[in-house]
Image (cartoon, rainbow, N blue to C red; front, side):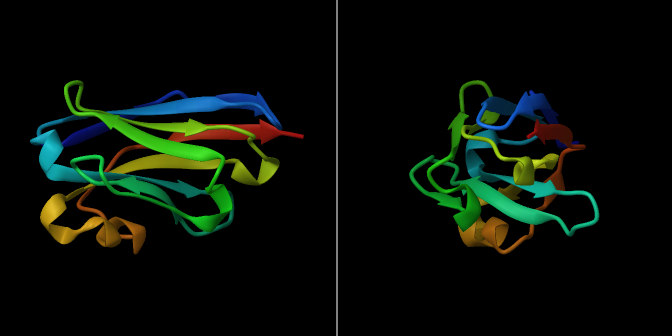
Length: 126
């Protein structure tokens, strides 16, 4: 079965950086678009970033453009989210997600996914 395992979360001061990783198994990784979502306390889950299977296309939500970078290593079946200039408002549980590439990256950016990870907590202190 498909498994997505996130790592790299933690506590960081405002202005700091973290890199999240998501290791995927049970799927042909390069045939899947990958995404990151987050859910802050008391809020709905929201889309953060997505990358196509070929890595040619990336999407970001406006609030993270210029600060976060999504990338992938298809040889390692891993997707990354480099987060710089972190703000307290970025505090959330971050989830990795996967969707087959035939759906298009817009499927993830619209909030949908076929597979989800368990999440990793990112806390940004002021």
